[in-house]
Length: 421
Length: 169
Image (tube, rainbow over all chains, first blue to last red; front, side, top):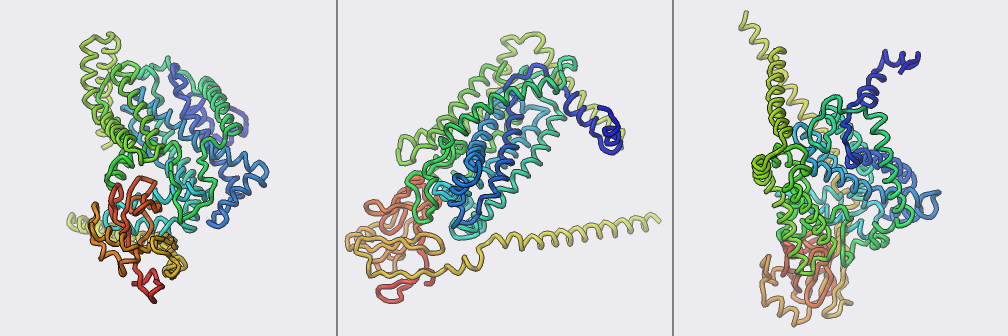
């Protein structure tokens, strides 16, 4: 970049060098597939959610006597209010969808492994914040599902040792979910997206430190990297086009397909709907909560089920690069895990009164945790088997080199630290 | 000389620690009003007493009244209900029926499932919670999990033979 204005700015702020470093010259592996689009898509959905949310908040009233009607006001009287609301509601589902694919890609290709652990963990933190934001936002329409969903989830905190009852009352600001709960959820639902934006920046700083992984699982040589812009801006935008087509189909043609009909009934603290279900993206975790017969155990199991992903860098002990692409057993594990998630989702959707559903849920819950706990053993056995079966010479060489590089890096790190002292 | 310097260092370290502790305590104290502001407000606390007229609840009938924003079940039990309730001690959280009522024909329990806080539905003898399948008997005692505890008995007293006040024992 040039020109007197840019020059003037560059003397006071590293604009050109920043754009060069992070965008136009940012080295990106040339072999990234479309599975690497979903981080960018998540960023776009975040922008969409913040934009639609800010405009919805101009018309929404966070008051238990007015909230339900203000949604109807938005739907019927506000110019394009229906569009803003359907975009926001569909956007929540879209957000979880792209994040789940983003996580599945990381798990499949083993992108969470060294040196990308912090990248993975900041992502885990983002998932938790996303879940909290979605949960609090779901109370705002003040329908029956909103009300009872918030009741059930705030009740989970009752298992806090000693002060459980007080924690629940403190969270709600009332003895049951009420007006005070609604106003604080609205306040926090507005705050959290900005915390998420902050955490996304941390996530991106970590990404730009370790750079993108790629399907081969091998850190490419400089000549095999290409600049992010224009190659991946173009690829990401093409993916965005596809995403927006699917998103628009939901927004314009089936906006209510992801909204529970019971949420069109105003909240009634005296009557629980005969069948309460969370939004689809919480179903597998909800099924785990219900599958444990003991309440404390159920809550712990559900919390753990979300956090298990964070342990993957420790659990996966295989040195074979490329994740499931070059690891047939890990690939089977991956697909079985996806299947188990679908089974759990189905169980979470069904009422718990059917005993065979309960048993299926318990078996699927065991499989869920087992599939994490077997990873350390299976990955080691698989590595030995693959080496014995004979890996291509190049891969063996690479694994040796990676090991040497790691040793060299630690040595160099020690030396540098020594220099500083 | 060295002792002097060391003495200075110790004094400085001590002052750093002391000011850090005082500063930390100040920040913690400043958090109290913020945390406390999320507890129930005075007007929420003022909803703490509810009066129930029992004269129009027929035997076998149940009325649901709001107390502290939560539903309270007032069940008029028939002699058979009472006999059945007194015959057992409950299953998961054993408690004799006599301890859960003031007069055996009136059962007063908070209608909030002790599992996840849903409102159970009156079905046959007792209640069933449709959220996660817990069941309670006609003494409000849990007979099938996942609920860990019996339905809570709120503090209440008989003002007259046909009127109770919930919220004050």
